[in-house]
Image (cartoon, rainbow, N blue to C red; front, side, top):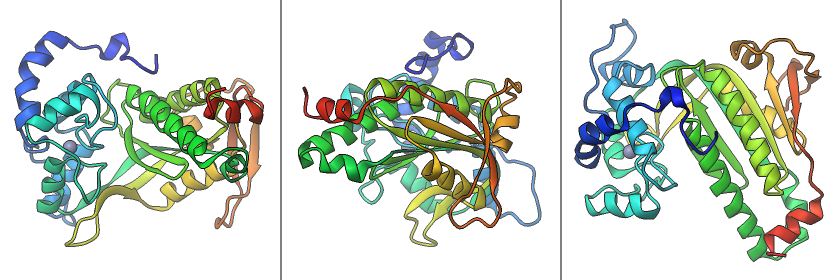
Length: 309
Ligand SMILES: [Zn+2]
């Protein structure tokens, strides 16, 4: 399920292809934003971001979903235009390419972000995942094999998360950061989608022999441009983002730590899943988490896989 769309969001692809193909190639993906409700503290730019993030821009949602159908990863994190494979080559011919300053965005989204610096505070579900014990693992293999292991992690995580309509914020070292918003497909609660994505990520990376620890949390974050007048990225910031990062750092290998807020927002029945109170670095109070465990693989298998044994 992680590598393909579900039936519920498998829209009429024929119509999508006809109506969106040319638009995806040529248009500013965020240019069809309709005006949202005004609030006194938001600028016009903030209103545009709020509309985009909260689902008021139906055209952009459809376009992003369409772009996800075209191979291959990596992609622009805002519009999902592919940068790799055949899809990336085709879009490249039409002038869509990664922004040099921040290759997680395409040049069109970069221009939009620079023209409309701002953002909005929105509901969000967050998934942080990293390769646990990577420093120790690096001691057991050559630098080339270690790099190959990280490549496997990037490729696997990209496939799984894109399959769940995540906004992949970034890969940093041995970590991936992904966001889920209420406006995404499929039409389920974004915390439920994040939790499903985390389970799939744990299962698939386990099959690759990668010792991953994952944190899932739901809350609010400011999502928008950072860097002031010199926009350097579009990302999410706030205490709930920090909590998600700390959860992933605290999770053991082959384990997901799910905050109670994400657990209840996902609507999971209380099925006796282990709960635990954990101390998070930099946080004064302990946090109650649900603990989901995947299958553990011996470290030797990871090393052997990385060197192609
Ligand atoms: Zn883009």
